[in-house]
Structure formats: C-alpha cells, structure tokens
Length: 115
Image (cartoon, rainbow, N blue to C red; front, top):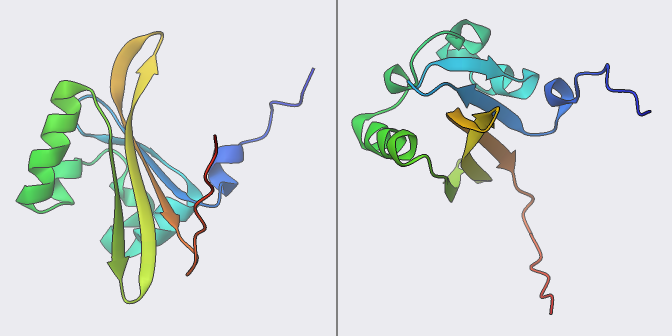
C-alpha cells in the first residue's frame, strides 16, 4: 500500500486555496499563505473571499458558487504570468465550495497538439 501519511498539498508548487459554499476560506497551502502574506497569509483562514476581492470579482465568485461551476484564466502582473483555475470541489458527492489553483507560468509554454 502506498504511503499516504504525507501532506503533498502543502509542498505542491502552486498556490491552492479552498473555500466552502459561502465563500469562507477553509484551507490554504504553504505557497498560498506566502503569496497572500501582504493580505494576511494564514490569518485569511476563516475569512470571506468577498472581503479579499473587488466587486467585479465578487460577481464572478457568487456565480461560480451558485452555478457550482469552474473558471480558468491567465493573469499578468509585473511581467509574471499566472494560470488561475477555479473549480468546484465535492464532499461525499455534494458540492462543498471552490478550489483555486494559481500556477506561475514560465516565459515560454509549449502547446502540444495531440490526435
């Protein structure tokens, strides 16, 4: 049987945040707490996503929570490009909130065509 006693999420090389169905942040990995340190880092646990975002973003978050759907986009700031992937998560088959994974992209990302 494989070793499942380690916490791979904490050392995953992308920022991962998780919220519940009300938009309350319930989990953040180490990279997420580091990336959001100016906003409070680990102290963001238990707070609302809606307090962390401007209203245009909150409109999107509310829609994602209501429709239980995902959203993926690229951002660029100070020459750093990131892929942001927001996706629903489930607990025992029931919608439980959203995950957000933020991946810093290298300068060149190849596209591989597959048939």
